[in-house]
Image: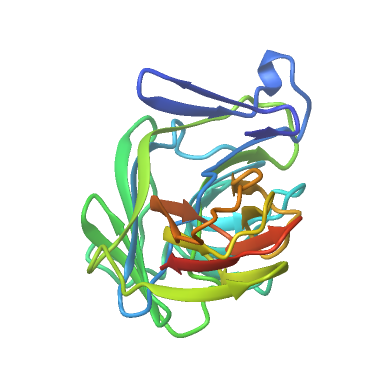
Length: 286
């Protein structure tokens, strides 16, 4: 979505962020686009952010453009956790930040990769930008060539991260554009992980998992008339509702009721709420 008078337009396979000041916006306007879902980190596998990007102008005074796998504050254009490229005024850098702490920045002039110590994007040129990240290191690539390697733990507080792209003016009224022709985050390694389960009994609200995952299925038994089972994406019943059973009718033979969820994904956690009446629920998830 967009923030502070900027705009995000998607057409022809391209996402275009504008600060829009020249088109009726205000000074210090900005635009941000963030994926709804986060890419689930699994211990033992590296994560890979990748996409095609055009900075449009080599640099613009009083403007910051960022892209990568990171979270931001809801109302302020500021990274909280994750890894990203940044073009701020004339300074190009690679960055990481952990839990709103100090940003770890390596600027052009101090890179240690194949492209030399200095590199900045050329105006109106598309680049494939890649970030491979693990709990112990992050590798930043341009068109498949290593730009910089950052080594060290705790560069990001969380490793399950969304895609984020931003274009913001810190002052002034210049309309600045930032474009992408596609972005994704993939996990390198086995696609499927070992699943687990939790057995829930009676009226209860249970956090089965914190963070991202998938629901494989459930088995419901010992149902009392009008029992309801609800799933939420998060650690409270105030988080987004994933699925609601509605009132379940009791079966006289008490036969188990299996339901296949086909790997239904969740991003921020899995909370299961058994309410109104009682039943038992076996939840199978990753």
